[in-house]
Image (cartoon, rainbow, N blue to C red; front, side):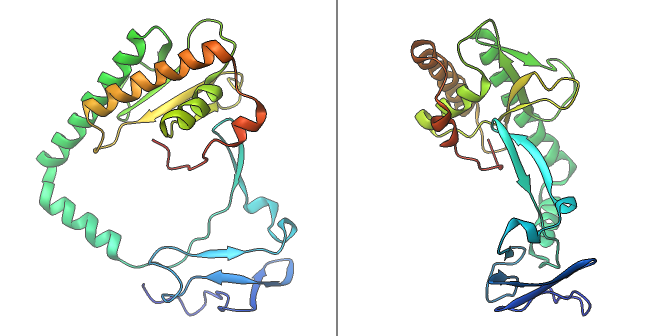
Length: 224
């Protein structure tokens, strides 16, 4: 891990003290930002209660059907990820990255076509330039919504496909989004489309999920 700036005022391993402008000095039970505590680029800080975290530092995001609060600490990290990226630049070059991105886009297009052909979903932004991802929503009137589909999909097959409301002025619209990464083949895209259709068939029979079931949905923001 890169050395910490002299003026970083980072808390110590035990009995840590935290300072913010206009906020009294606080005691915290646990934190980990030193090389012996965490891998490079990873750290944590545990607050005794939510009142000790200034509200203006919290970012709220609508993800997987309900709002999550996010607070991120920035501090010096190691250079391993930069060296790894530089290696990839030298190894792949422009031609290599072009091939990778085109393959990802082909698989994203294939997934989108499978979802559209199922008749269960309509695509958002179809035909427009975008990242290798598929944004879609349910068609027709259903006794369940996109959040129910995401929860059922995670429960049955373990897929992490986020569902959320769009920003203000379109907040009544729910969508799902599948990011097609380099390790997702056309076979994987086909499997996901089939599993989405199966989740819908299950929900056709039993209706939307109970609120308790929705809360069991895995909430990994990494998503699919």
